[in-house]
Length: 296
Length: 256
Image (cartoon, rainbow over all chains, first blue to last red):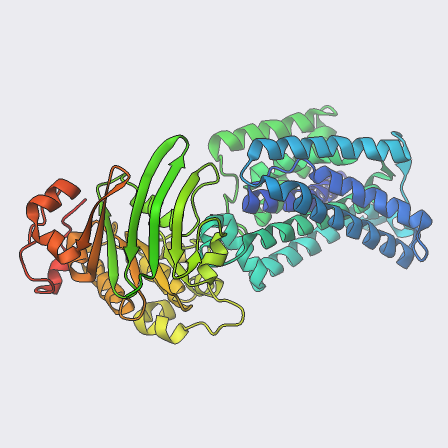
């Protein structure tokens, strides 16, 4: 029983990580039709920003409030990069899908190369607050606190995004834009501002995933964003393009399947099962769990 | 009277197809001007070009002016904020949003939305505020599509096939609403239902093969059965009846 609980909660920790990356990816694709392969870069910037700030930024550190400050710095850096990418590189290329893909793929490769050139290709130990190194006993399972932190953060981010979409003017514009972007402009709304906003939200969530993923894995490396991005794309497709709630459901399914199959089957079989699950969803329900709806 | 809209030598190419080939016409500053033509002649393309919604792959040339202002190359949201209201074909309400949210989306900062006017025209929208727009009937969705445009002041309304696919009774209701709307704002209407055209339109512009084939008084056009048949491919049926003789006739669809 304890093993099942442990696998379920560590699976949910992984799901939380996927969700943080996938939620922004899904909103960006749903609203702006941009398949953003550079999304992993925002995660990398968040992770390295947090790691750098913990060691160098006055007031920041590897524990307590200093760590919170370091994470805030990493998230701010990821958000800023996301905004710049949208304004400088993506905005001139809206409706030019192939060019967008080329630019974002190129940017993701260049970003990894830049991180490698600056801090080396090897994984670096990530600052981890003492509490995250410990475990918490839940129903007989000793669950790492780093995973619980990810789950709590993902639930808070999910709630915040849903509240934003439900209760704010820009949230309304984004929900409408995911359905029919052209009609939003035909009501006199400059939908490009909403594009920048969803890039900022997505960049912030991905950067947070980078910072908390560093805590979860204990290390940070330049290629981390890229490998997580593959599973985030799978989560987005299974959940339904543009649906934050769909991404949350899909992330839970993917995280749990991976964790349980990898444990009870052969290591690596879980990843194959996730790809199999993607194929089944594409065959039976190509629009994903929730279809193209911004909230549900 | 100076026209509210002037279209000169408008040419639109989309994906290699030369859809509009030098279209020129004007829209009077009052009443309804109807844009007629057989299916595929470029009526919707004309409205979309005016409101700046030609696809990015498309090429638009010519001149479009609303008053003294040139409309070409301006982004759609600025044209709409400048007083160009657009009710698209197939309504395009946001199915996942409620009726109230659909209306709220059309509100603009710095102006007071005219909910009183909209709810006076469409009381049902007030009652169904919490209902998802996707669960409304076709007629109710059309009311919502028109209502959200009327929340703001408009200098000209572009309305694309508002009676398409609606039940006869609802066609009459939509025609009545447009008649009332046209009392205060000029309308450029694309419409296939000739009974609706007969009731609403004062001027007519007929497109054929991407060009203007005929312009003039809508009533005169509908009286000329042979001309209507040659331009639109349909008989006018009750064309010789005086305009407005029988409002119920609006529900009868003459052209497909």
